[in-house]
Image 1 (cartoon, rainbow, N blue to C red):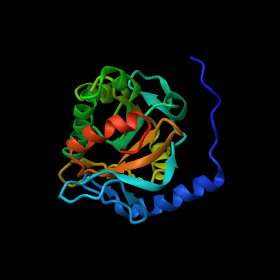
Image 2 (cartoon, one colour):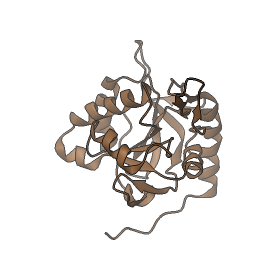
Image 3 (cartoon, rainbow, N blue to C red):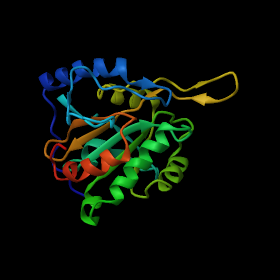
Image 4 (cartoon, rainbow, N blue to C red):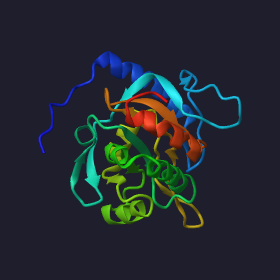
Length: 226
């Protein structure tokens, strides 16, 4: 497949993104726990109830320049493969007991409510924070239980961590606890990239319910802010 030449981000744009990344790194890292919105972001909707909504970023992020391995064992260039596509990116791991499966399930349910043509446009990318255990095969099996079209990526941990950091998402190497459990500490944010400029304009924290994704996805697929 022929791809258009890759557009390289300007240094000033990257600097702005990294400034917000620092705030997000401080607020959004947990062992499959919850995270909070950054202070220097603008809420997309002023809520009059207790429902947590998406956050519109004042300084949108560029897509991380990651070339990883998909669930079929093939090389996957995140920037090229998702260029011009509405894209959701999430970092997590398949052995996560709570937040990761719930987040992906919420997205899967919301995606299923879209018209078929819009479902085909949307890219949902799950990048593992535990690549030693999340092999292409095991990652593929886990994701197919959520949605067979979800894209799973694995690879070198340090490369994945560097890519996550450009989005303000913190990852720590998995550690074994005294009871033998292996815990992967990772940021739990979902980043929504719009097709018009391939930049992340909206951030969703782990406490955003499925109803918000159902409301927002139609706009995001069309390239609009929710």
